[in-house]
Length: 309
Image (cartoon, rainbow, N blue to C red; front, top):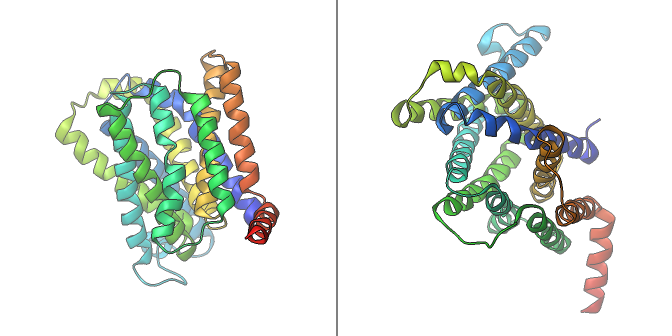
C-alpha cells in the first residue's frame, strides 16, 4: 500500500476533511474566541491520537506511556524535537489565520492563504532542494484557479490580509518541517506530539487574552468535536503519514484542493451555489494537480526544454 499513490490518497483525504471543516469552524467561532477554539480542538485531536498510539503499543506488547513513545529506529529525542518544532509552527499558522479571518473577507483570505503554494518551492530552493520547472507552471495554473474560485472583489491589503499572508508563509513552513521529520520518525506519534504543543500554546493564549465561558463551549460542542477528531486528529495525522511518500511541493498542490472542497461543502450543507467562474476555478485546480502528479510529464517537458537550448 505504500508509495506515491498511497501518499496522494492520504493527503487528498486530509484536504477533504479540512474543506468540510470550514462549516464547523465558522459555526464554532460564534461561541468562543480563536485561541479557545484552537486549544480545545487540538487537545481533543491529541487525546484521540494518543489513545490510538497507546492501543497499537499495547497490541505490540509495549505497555504504558513510556513504552508507547520509546524511540525505535531513530535518534533519541528526535520525536520530541519534531513534535515541538511542528507544533510551534502549526500554532503560528493557525493563530494568524484565525485572527486574520476576523478582519478580512473569506474570499480574500482563501486566495491569500493559497500563496503557500508558491512559498513551498521558494523555501525549498533556499534549503538546496531541486524543484522541477513544470511544478512552477502547475502552481501558476493552481493560483489562477484559486483566484477564480475565491476572489469576488478588488484585492487590497488591510490588517487582516497581512495576518493571513503571514499565515500562508507559516503554512509553507509547516509543510516543510513535516516533510523533514515525518520520514525520520513515527508519523502518528509526531502528529500526536504537535497537537498537544499547539493545544497547550493556544490554551495559554486563551487564558491571557480571551474570556472563557463554559456554557458557550458546550453550545459549540459539535463544531469542536468535528474540528478536534476529524480536522485535527484524523486529517493532520493523514498529512504526516502521506508526506512520507510525497514531495512537499506536490503536497502543497494537493492541499490547494481545500478551497474546492470548502466550496462543495458550502453548497451541500449551507445551500451555497457555485457560479460558472467558480466552477472554472475548480477545474483549473484539478488540472494543475493532475499535471503535478505525472512524473512522465515532468520528464518529457524537461527533455523538450533541454533540447531547445
